[in-house]
Length: 197
Image (cartoon, rainbow, N blue to C red):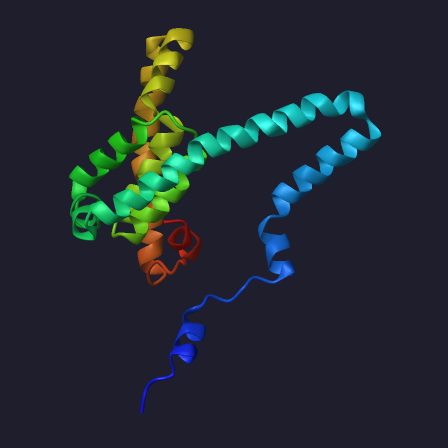
């Protein structure tokens, strides 16, 4: 007896989203579009700069998000999970902490780019300690940011802030990882990330 191929293909298809799910998923973009439209209708003089800012933000997002998504997909295919686990995983020790600091301090992109990268690394075996350190370094210890800070506020201020930020970053990562271990492990769903890459 031959297997029923139509039944197999129907089972493999992902469920289509309902209108309610779609509206919930894109509610922020829809709210921004509605505000822009209402301003254009009721106060057209003030609507032009608001719509211009909305358009500029959308272009900036597209210019950044699309290449990062492509690079994340390539990274996930080309870099074995064992390599990520070895250098950023639970057994990586101080080497993993230093790499996480370096990976967080080197980029110049906005912080919202770090979150999908962190989720992908976490999914592939990086420890929560190193992910928290990467995110904190991305937010507070980027090299270009430190140079601007030294220029405007002075090198002593920059070095003092860095000397305080560095141990606190490691402490926060350690506390979060300890809390995760005590609570029974990390139970997260990365379905959105999997659909992107």
